[in-house]
Image (cartoon, rainbow, N blue to C red; front, side, top):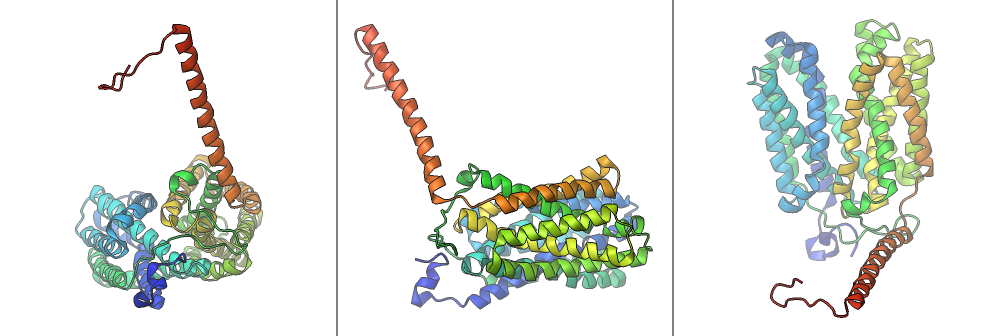
Length: 445
């Protein structure tokens, strides 16, 4: 049996995978619309008299809840199935946005637009992405690019849709209409998706069959922690830029506010381009080569932002490079996790590594506040990029021999411990002259 699905192996259960791709694209585009949140900050602050920073905190909560949800999406999928889980997530996401149209306090906004929306979005994001990759084990990079690219495209398109709705109908009505549209998109897309049942991970391009690691087994390998560091670095650089690019342009490059704001659209375009280009490229040249190259380019870009005298072209070139590499890295990583730890538990395993996304977003803000400025933060990101580049060049997937060796070592240690206890028991029995007998009723001494 191949690694895709029983449906593909049974002629009577053949599935047109194109519909699964289309369904995933629709779902991911709906989910990606939450990245238009920055459009709502100022209108909400103006309407309710809230501090802009307090209003913007909502999206930090959303991002954290999104990343946290990916830890549990695999177990929920096993229990309820892919269609029911995505449809339910779409309903919760849509309802959360619609309820946001009725909030009058920051606490309620944090609850519904932050925790509720973020958790639903992360659940559907991880389950639909992992499922699509499993359907195309020979084109994991391409399918990851399609899925994550659709997520970015949703953000780009709805930047204009939500902006127009806020301007014409007001921020509260925009929330209501946005929620209805997203609910319809995600639920409709879920009906086109079929679940891929993985039986055994196929041999990799090198001809080596990859072991299907459970989360517990994965966490016993050093590769899991090394990949987490690399992913954390990639997310930290991109998310910090996305959240601060307009201010960076004004303060470091001396641009006027309107010109610097153009960088927001540029990030969306190059971020999506990186997802669509570097994902398929990783299928051809190797995923870690793509990641190491992206980290090297990111390192060069943040060094330019830290030390160079920024002109208009230099600023936008650096921003575009970081956005392109960030989009590519988060696209390639789901496939890297399956290359290292197998397809069967890819969603659960990637959910653990994906916590680097949430931590990367929070860490960049804390470092910026601690060090007091953009340039020191970019220097820290540059150092992390250099370290992560070395990791990406050096790290190798755990081999079957390593897995067997580790298991044998644990078994041998357990055997030695048991033998030692047995010897000590016999020694004690010999000294006593007679052995202790077990009570057949209580199984005790």
